Image: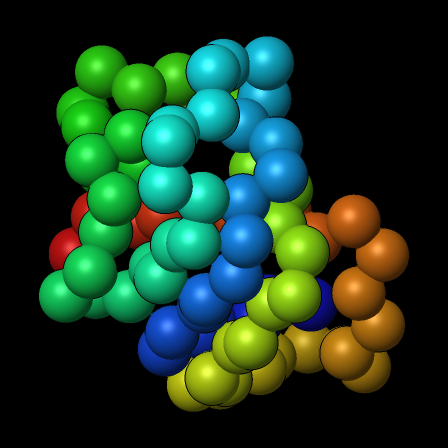
Length: 76
């Protein structure tokens, strides 16, 4: 299943072993990408959140069951 989100907000709890930023309240949207996520040299890593709010923009191919979702930022 592919889930397209318009906006994701939450409290950052893990950054794939990298140090967490001082401000852990994060919003990810096309107009609000944190530098640590949008930097072209950033490696692929697992990002973990708590208290998440997601605005869904679309879903294709399957039923929405989220167990350890994989979040990726795509270039447009």
